[in-house]
Image (cartoon, rainbow, N blue to C red; front, side, top):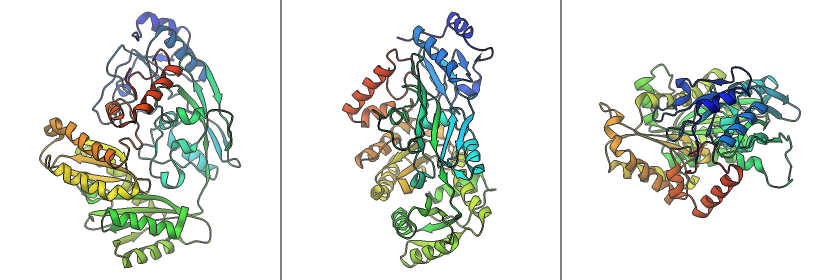
Length: 470
């Protein structure tokens, strides 16, 4: 049973920390980006060193006070907001932002949990290297939160998600003990691999304070094309064709429905679009190639072959880096337009690649029987991850559909489960999907998760109610 962080506890804790570490909670800490969930906190702890994180956890564990780790606040499943139960401490890593080391020869960076993703990307670029994770919130998302949720993004097809970037972790246990695990090794078989357990655990098992992260050589040449495809099945055939021609030279392969492009026309008309009339389905393909290959030439050859095969109906190839950046700006603007429209329900799902077209067709048909809605389906089709989002028809707002929302979510997630997919591809479970995990997760695996939680956090202070019910 947890206790609230009462004034006596906070006063005692404040005396153990440097001045200014413990603060009153500002509103920005207490809501998530979609505005659906709101949290509470008795105070916000903003440490600058791992020893201070250990002090907070040691005191909270002894007093049985809940601790909610907080990264950039960009999570979309409520993992950073705790709305019920005794008031916790919110532990923000925002002042632990240092890149402790960057080794271009070893292709490794050591970054603290509060380091913003775009800052790590910039440091890698300055050293002639690349950090392989890129996503729409990279200007505010922080390394600790990205590791905690095992975030993906647009580069997973080539570079992998955050778990695949992680070589080692510095961790603070619930009782305040520190694991100094910042190894830089590709090969390390000294017992259980704790880092792979902690990545994706959403702050429920330990607090990540720093990480050793994999860097990559930068591709010498880049290119991109926006291609109108016949349908999602054609997009998959195009991906196979592109991989046969270019192998790992494909850095990204994004599928977009016409509805997403129409949303941009509706609420973000300043975003330049490659086609005068948005096609029903389009693909953004991005290349990173070595010296000696011509990205535009390779894309032209791919376009010609795909056109001949009836997969592609039209296409625009970026003629320079500016146009390539414009293509990606359009892709990253789609979630912003979604928020401006206001979703009834948003789904972050993955299914086996071969089943993507069937999932889209079956979900569209099933939802048409519930109500008239606008469907914006887009995502990282190269790795099977779709964002399947539902919106009101013009003239209505999402409040009019609120009673229908549970049925919409159940319909989509049920289809995903039937196809052997996952109801959380890259956003995590948080508090929003705890019931989905219990419904669709393997019961034996869930019991093992609970046993691990009890072993590492016996008092249940770390992110109470996230991932697993208390």
